[in-house]
Length: 292
Image (cartoon, rainbow, N blue to C red; front, top):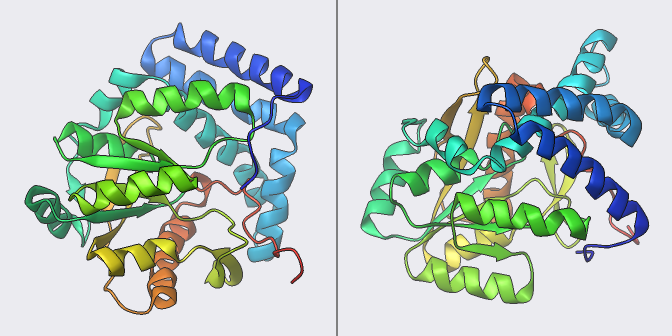
């Protein structure tokens, strides 16, 4: 994992993001979310994000009509902008998700495990707003921590992590120290949220959207080692762009960690195919590790 940087480019990017966020935060919540979505979508024309969306779609969905590719090139960064400002909106965002009922085949098992103090690993992806399930469960009184990967821009990362903490703690950085703290929390009967759709050079190639994607199997390994329930969970944005369904998919049975990871990828893939505009196609998800 690369370390966050504080170069001149990072400084300028941070100023732009802070200007957008500062302007948005002056608006009422509904207008704020819509404004930030539009602003980030327009900025994406100049950051290369729209082209990266097109490139990834060409790789895994080569038959997608061009007008749909262009729609997604606009809507994907818009969803990111909405998710970003929601995460900066603290109590207002929590209020949006606090009373949302859990849906899906894993909902009952998740509630039972949290109430019994059984270790739980909540697996999600950069889909919808992946902070929504964590905020919703914490609002219910469950002990839920979050594992996060620092953003590349250190100036922006400092503020981002502070806002994540506002939504709920504990938080664990993806680092040796952070992982050790996360394991202690898990063993104590806590639930830990993990985002599983990062490219990981140390992982294994597991199919995602029809292509091998290098994926960490550590979540599955930890689940087996510590007896944790594994629940794929998502914050699915509703058509109004402001509210969410919290989907707890079928739990993943313990077994071979690679096969468990296949099931985790397959769970996310179902939602991405159904709602492609809500997944973060900007990621370099299908990179090949160095030396391969």
